[in-house]
Amino acid sequence: MPTYKFVAKDLMTEKVVCVHPDTPIHTLIKILIKNHINGAPVVDKDGKLVGVVSKTDIVEYEEKTSKKQSQSSKKSFYSDTNGKQKKAFDKISKAKGFGKTVVKDIMTSHVITAQADDTIDRLAKIMYGKKIHRIIIQDKGQVVGVVSTLDILNAVSTMGYGSSAFVTEEAILDLQERLEAAERSIQSLRDILSKIHGEK
Image 1 (cartoon, rainbow, N blue to C red):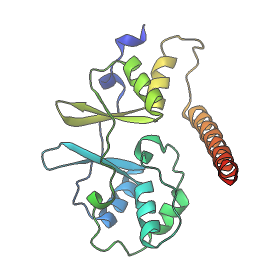
Image 2 (cartoon, rainbow, N blue to C red):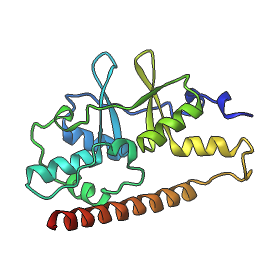
Image 3 (cartoon, rainbow, N blue to C red):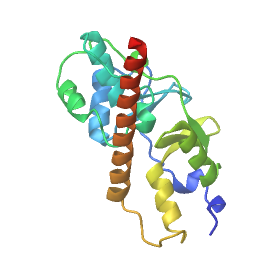
Image 4 (tube, helix red, strand yellow):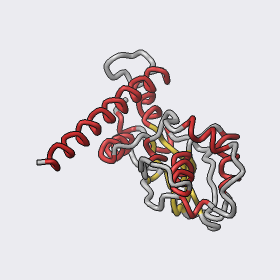
């Protein structure tokens, strides 16, 4: 069966946990922990998508307010697949801070979306082009699901392309971890080269 037969609504996870701009951070933390998720779409009272928020945003906000060094990762909702900031988040989640800080104070307003009837090919192209691992699916302006690279790879693996073996989650995560390690190495090399260039 050709890949264009599959569309987003066939692959997506439909039960998407969303939060609101005025949701307190301590409530957001509880929601993320309870649902075992790294982040959530942010919707207004009419259900319109206005941003995304993730564990990394919480960690970066805490580091910023406490004047600690932070590594920016504004696309963390889309790219963080294995909880890279897990230890930092776990520590922060036990704190009593954040005061009156709410989701809109830390969320990322830039959103990357696709439509429920977009083909699997289009989803793959968006993810590849944006270098992301998950994408929010909308239908008539409403958030209706999320599709991850794992969803796409599992769908493709059942169509008889290449090996007929089912692609396991462990295998995908291992590959993603290797790619992320390679990206970090490349970035470190770029930083070193930039410093050397600057000293000339």
